[in-house]
Image (cartoon, rainbow, N blue to C red; front, top):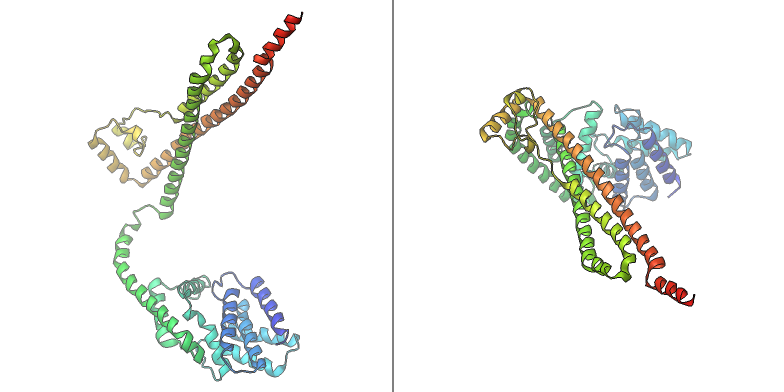
Length: 405
């Protein structure tokens, strides 16, 4: 085959990438590439000449380029684009007419008149037999909506697809009938199953509809839910970090008390006093800060009816109601549920004060880790200096010098 196919592929790719409206979610470069792939698959099983095969591949690449000029009469627009491009490429006029004829045969209500038109028709509708048909179909539905052509409901779209599968579409080539028809029927069964499920859900949707105007917006619910979850996760992380430091410093102090401090009774080990004090001091300070980071704050746990009426109390935080009687709390909750703004305000306050607590925890944790790190560094330096200048070897050296004198 000639280099015309490479040139056409590059031309169409550039055209659909740069000039096609992004509202075309289905009739885009991806669709064209699928049709080209399906065309090649069909051509492997037919006895057309190489020239006719080349024509069909050109058609597969060019058949939807007309969408760059709009949806109206896009097949004719595709023919104009094909003629202009192929003429400039010096393509044979007779073969060019075949290209245009095959492009026009991709019209939905057209009937193919020869094998070439049958092949391109089957290739253009090969998605009916693909496992991704339902997703592809949804893209086409959304495309029609974005372009302002038709806004189908889910129920209408299912019924339309079932009608197309049953009466409006057929495969023409023997290869498609043998290899694609069974997969197409499988997709039809999925559509019918979805339609039945849609009917079952219809009653539930009606029940939901009557509460839709009263219930909080789903996006708002998601915002509060995700943010609250993130706050709680961060709080758990902070507590875990604090517990790690508590455990580490507890082990350090235990080892110091059991192994290091008893040795300080021996005068020969007095050089260890200052490093040990530094070591234990920073460990104790780290433990204190870790405890402060996790220590809970207890609030009054009471509210008045005026607080509820004036929306001055957050009923979602246990610290504001743990001393109240159950009947009083139930009354307060009922009052809050009557007022959507009060619910949002309470949720917002809950998030805000959780953020305040998180800020305090992480600030203390930062100081705790910093002090722990500094303490470890200073302790190691102090022990090293003590061993170097005041350790047993240094004492023997000074003693020998004194004896010499």
